[in-house]
Image 1 (cartoon, helix red, strand yellow):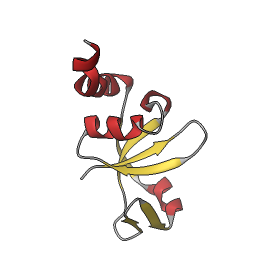
Image 2 (image 1 turned 180 degrees about the horizontal axis):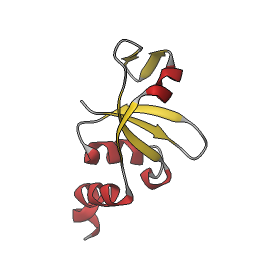
Image 3 (image 1 turned 90 degrees about the horizontal axis):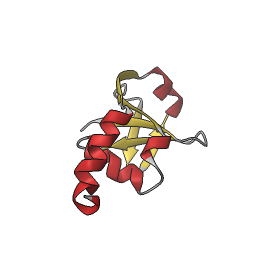
Length: 90
């Protein structure tokens, strides 16, 4: 399952697992505007941290060393918004 590093405007960093961009958008939309966050799909180093439920255990600093696979842009988020809410607003 894809892994995302999300940095909110207040500096909070979250690690989120989602099947695709649309699921990710929905999860982030529950907490704030996905458009206000920096979102990177990452390839975390195996064995350096573990996710138990919604809690990250281990050396979170290692996330600065993760390989960024891609940065989600406004275009990605627009498609995800339409997939989730297009029928409601359109």
